[in-house]
Amino acid sequence: MDVFPLVYIKYRKLLGAIEGNALAINDLPELSDGNMIYIKDFDGTEKDAPNLEIYQKLSDKNDLWVDAGPRKFGDVVDIIMAGASRITIMKNVFPMKEIPNIKEVTDSMIYTNIDLEKEQDILFTPPPGIDGLVVFDDNNQTELLKTICSQYKVYVTEADEKNISYLKSVGAAGVLLDFEKFKLVNKDDI
Image (cartoon, rainbow, N blue to C red; front, side, top):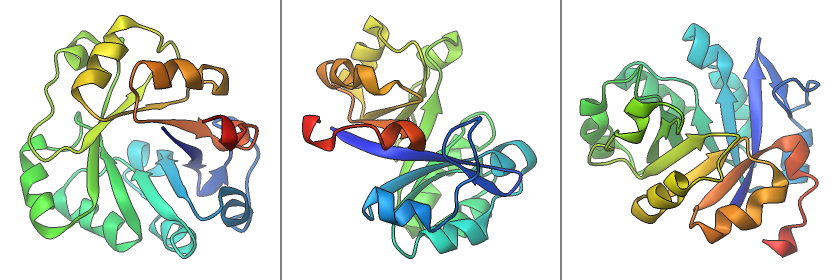
């Protein structure tokens, strides 16, 4: 099971937790050992102003998985060019019919988000070309999650480090933990 650190960008500041203190870019490579870092960019998702320059700096020493709310094909290309090897596309802002076009021009992995508390998300069938799902759910200990994990490659965000073993048992491909929580996880236990 993969366990990746999740960092946030808000107001052009890098944060280790949603309500956390600002991080220096230099803090991340040293602590994440050059692994994948999941970036939830609120400037991108809420204001359509992704922080491409921050991605470029981080991509020098880390693989990046960026969730910045691209709205059109060109946005996805910009994020990939800035260093992302994986992208999360928000299905409510990006036309899913464009996924095959993205796959024609890149090898980057494409994920989409679902919320297990929304009925329309539970019934959502990912379009061809989607590599997996990102589940935003703090209360993820449900049979529904187990069912989805049996059908798709699923990563769960904002989980607590204490329920990693549960997520592993239901077949989640991985967990995306706030950077502050990620630092506390004993990687040998995973």
